[in-house]
Image 1 (cartoon, rainbow, N blue to C red):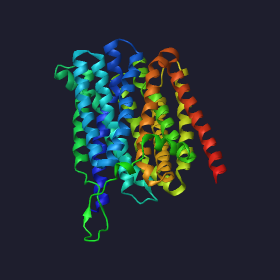
Image 2: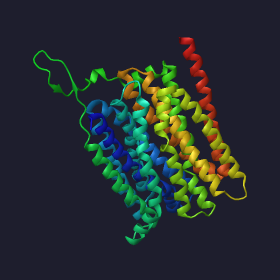
Image 3: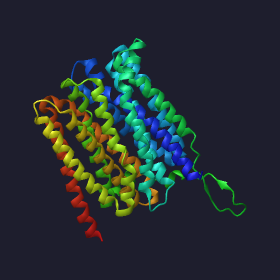
Length: 414
């Protein structure tokens, strides 16, 4: 097996376990917050904590990767997620919401590490084909993420067997999965490259000197001067905001509609399958026809998703089949925006700015998602599932406006 394939295999394994861990607790996080506080609005804040944690840690992880390599950053990221799952269990056991929220935030570190893994894959790829390498690692999450929600019911039984709150049980599975992901990341080979020397041609470890790494402000100014790169980041952010707004409230909406945990697990599982199962195709499309083709297709898919969600909200009672179709397409749209936007970012910036802007993009992506999640519970209370989908539609329109502006600025500069 070549070095590149071995690295991809290790990243694939880490992503598989990370996806299972994230998905295992995803379906019950909002329900736990609602149960602890007795308030539906807090369900959104629970999921917001995970996404906020991912947003806060993404840029520091990219800085760590730039200085010490991807292995160190990914191992630490998944390790913090393991600690977070343990703190979630403790917070639920003592019924202390702030501790529970801190644990959820730390779980978000596994999300950030999983997202950074796609860029780690692109580092080993042909520079002309970053989309395919990224999509292979993203696709790895499919197996774990589809299985993860189906651990919800068995996890609940395990928690009950151990004398815990049954809804906390899935976080036992999350903790074990994050630990396995950290172990897989630790087996990665430290980044090395061959440099010429007057005395030898030995392979030596090379790290960028501190003065060569751009500051946050310098990277941000560079981004604002690059219309295509800016639109790439906007696409990644808006895709996350649309997906988060609908997804975090779907389990709560279904609970209010009297669906059981098994049904919730199925919908979440199908949604996450949509997020990852077609990613190799989208990576190939981005390399073959350009990232813009993937982003445009994603906008169409998102429009259909939102229309289905609004239609379901107008029915006398929510339709299980429509929810499954809508949430599957929601995942597909997210995948298109993530792969298309990430590929566009890699191709539109120079090597020096690439890693800092990747971290900045992931931070902004998760902070945008956290903002939507923070208000999602309130939106569900005020306007039901209709308002949740209407807000997603507004974000999609904003993305389209930025697409038009980016094209005009790009043409004007050429």
